[in-house]
Image (tube, rainbow over all chains, first blue to last red; front, side, top):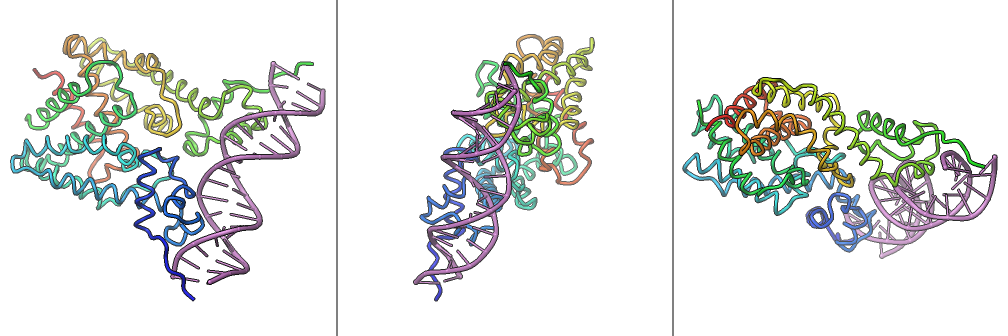
Length: 185
Length: 185
DNA sequence: ACCTGAACACCGTTCAAGT
DNA sequence: ACCTGAACACCGTTCAAGT
């Protein structure tokens, strides 16, 4: 006699994402997730392979969110589009710092996002770069911008940039220089 | 009747650093560290506060190592000095990827390095920047370079840059542009 | 003064048993 | 077909007892 499902993948991922932003990865416990969805922890294994698999789904959902967000920030003007993309990345990181860090695979034991999904999130930036500097250096340019933005955001998030001064000003100064560097030559 | 110490802070940190590079943070277990130094895990608490404290000491030792390394790479020519500093950072990251990541505080539960110690490791780059672009923009320049380098290295380490192409070439291209961006204007 | 075994709380995971 | 309690291995940490 089959028993009705009291929860599902979707709910587990949602609960895990909430717990993640509330208390970091360590707070994403199988027991805590189970508790949120009103079930006992062994039941989770009927819906996900294990904790790593669940966190992998969290990463995938997060990548999907950034992709949608960045896609909505496309701008016909390539220069403005690049700026919008980078600002969008930072805004997302501020809203969901733990999810952002998880995405970049900097937490041990969490599978990296699917390469094709990760690539999709970079598409708008890549398109803007192509229009801005031409196809032969678009990838290099996108990597330059992404590396700087990711590095700045990561250091900002972990407090490594607390050498004093206005962070927003430092960001703006850096962004202007970075864009100039890509478009020059 | 006092009993002689069979181990000490220094040995624990050394064992922890080895375990870290061999298997990541998760491998730095109190039991594993104790085993390496020939003792039982409860004894460790006579030498370090707890696991977080031990990892904090690992971070401090690592920062000390980078500082010494980068200090040795100073060059009278400011332009060459900047390049040497950045290459030095990447070289260190390749040799000790897990220690590098731990330094940037990207692993939950690990205390960030002492700000003044972290600042000391940036000193050579800051000095070169001052000679290169003047004191008023030296900090901004150092941050720009550091953010890009850290972002690139992190993405390289976690495989986020596997969009194809030569990584060393992408690094060289980016570095040239970054330095140009800082020195321009 | 340091080391040890025993113990505790907590975590991920498995599994036989329930409906 | 999903859920549960019981159980296991593993981990960080505490503590009384040894020398």
